[in-house]
Image (tube, rainbow, N blue to C red):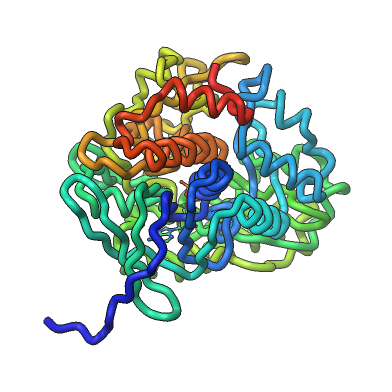
Length: 449
Ligand SMILES: Cc1cc2nc3c(=O)[nH]c(=O)nc-3n(C[C@H](O)[C@H](O)[C@H](O)COP(=O)(O)OP(=O)(O)OC[C@H]3O[C@@H](n4cnc5c(N)ncnc54)[C@H](O)[C@@H]3O)c2cc1C
């Protein structure tokens, strides 16, 4: 077939090209650019933040191990700035970011967008919004460049080193790195996505504490289920958390069975997800005191995907590493979130499985954490690609813990510094001097031990 569209080559040769502007991507871009690497970040939507902004997942998962912060570096810097600009209610202060493990910290996504515009721009990285990486060209074991699409058409973009922070591991997949996906005999089923949403008119200060807690309003949920109020059986409702003033972000309604790598299912999921948001809003108004007047402000513009594609990297971080709280010589960070495998379907058996994984046997105690090794972000097969964030190399159970924003930010920071070191020295991403990388990360505030 002959195509009509010309692919124009962008004249700049970048040192580091980051694909995806979520926490992995923005931390990587800031890190690489601050070191002086000629850096570009490509984002298919119109803001940075990824799930946190476009997906309305505007709550941070834990940033500490219950005793001390385990998330430092650029990710912490970003959220300290969000706090400074009033984007996190004073109730969720830095103390909480330091010592309250397992507590979500909601934030204002619009403040985060502004902070990221400023921090990424002032790092020197070039931002290209509404730009999607659609294909790539290889030169032996290296990526030569990416075919990108933007409002002007198709372009070819070259860089010495690439960072895949797409969440879906698209660049890794296209470059030939083996990936694990859901719905296979090895990993049957798929962890369901959720279309998140944002509400106003919630008088947070007048609502008793217990009615704010998703666990404690489980009884009300059971009554509503018995009343036949919902179109599907789903006892796990993460709930609504206060973001700013009288607003709250809602994380409710699983899209059971939806494969986020299937275009048709993804489209149908958006349509169904918007209906589910209405259902949960009606439930809150009718059954949960204090939420009677809540009004929908927005549903997310992208599906909230929990599981899609993960690379099989040099090291696959596994459930055994979680259970043994394994630490690594090549550690680029520590993390401490518990497992969080949402039920895969509506069955009671799945819900019981979910409860079991939240039980004592799987819990981390205060002060406990596990290491994130550098090798979970690279493969022997491609010399100039680092993969950070949700699509990094981990088994399914472990991924349920390390897919969240702070962990993605930790990986992104390390990926950015490593990409700079590789671009400078010309070495492959698997041959980077890890002690040098660790030294840089430590000097930039990352918590490595
Ligand atoms: C429903 C739900 C609830 C969650 N709750 C929490 C929570 O409470 N706390 C928490 O910390 N985490 C939570 N998470 C997890 C977390 O938000 C994500 O896993 C995390 O944002 C992953 O970061 P990332 O940088 O890897 O990817 P993402 O945040 O997904 O960012 C990827 C970015 O890449 C862009 N992109 C993708 N493909 C391309 C392409 N080809 N070209 C250009 N750009 C591209 C996307 O537009 C996106 O902006 C939740 C996730 C979901 C789905």
